[in-house]
Length: 453
Length: 112
Image 1 (cartoon, rainbow over the protein chains, first blue to last red):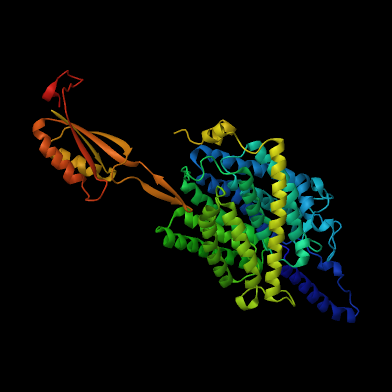
Image 2 (image 1 turned 90 degrees about the vertical axis):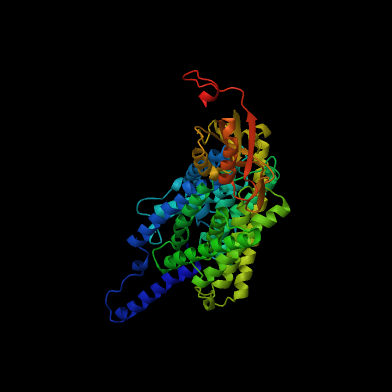
């Protein structure tokens, strides 16, 4: 998505076009005006981006909803599905009202200039002002670009649901997500993807499809939410077994499929970069699924369905920032490291520290995102089959940029999320009562039951 | 008359049913139950979280028989339900005071 390497390609093409035009100038013929090089609508790109948008929406509903629903107890199955679905609807409306503008308005931005516009976009695109059937963003309609980006804005808050599952008030959840989307998500997107003048963009932090914007962002917010809300009643002594791992595996499979839209779609074109993103996504995911499965097999004696599904998601997360930059063998290593690393984070570290991140949003998304973001700086190198480092940038310098990018993301998201949670707690209170928690959120919050068997 | 109640492993039910039919048992009542004995429960592991499952699923079968059949019935159940592993179950034998066939009103051995 607007990564710096991709931008060079259109510039290169422009150069070739101008060079080709020179002889014509010399012969005094009618030279094509430079305006002809302005992007026009490309049907192939548009078709792929329409498809990608559908795939990414499919990741949240029903993919993520099922993935999470299977891991909670049967009395809370509807509550997590409802939260994913309601977030999808609410963020769509907020995105149309002002979110798209805060994320992608480029008013006041200039390369190398750090100002307020480096962090938040203006409000000039509020209510989708200026978005017509003819608006273009690169080679695709701006409507498609806007909707594609909307699906990213939907899945990121939905990911956080897993961290506070089974205990948060529905009203508090909605309020938190609305504020968090407004303050945190739009800023992260703007810093990374809005182009020249964007804070991370100018720093040269590589994030192809959302390692910082989506995964570290959601993972850290999830950890903070889990800490602020406190553990579920009875955690960790009471049995809190996943009630339907079949759902979880189906959901993980849908995430896997949908992720091709997420990563390959982030090329914003139907081109070689999209193709490579697709290939490395598949390879990294498989390597991570096996990495987690074997880690578990060795340490606990048996390979599990929840383990291999979690590993696949960890791999998808880790390859996300790297997908347009690394080659197949880089992807294999990133996946394997993520499978093992997220396994350790979600099983050993979580147990040792005692926080109740119910469905391991931190362990999978933050840790996977950080592993992917940092290793992107390594495997982008030509020597590892990647797209190549920027001109005059050493691998060490790139890795350092990635680490700085991760650190700023973690700090910003943690502080902002903490503040928003405290505000929401003051206004409506974060948790359901102990009685409601025992009864289950399906009945307590929605007056419904997932199963009437 | 005797009432024989046996707790067995669920997957052995078909074998036990066949063995009982062979020794002439006319009817069996089967219930799915849960419990524990020396086998205790087992543990399940989800992302490193270990949960102890205290009660294991078992099948309870009940047969009402003539006292003369008792030894053969016990042998049939024992042989067919045995796996030689912990958790094979137990057999409980009770004296049976009276039996009534509801349809005809027959009582005692005639009702078995």
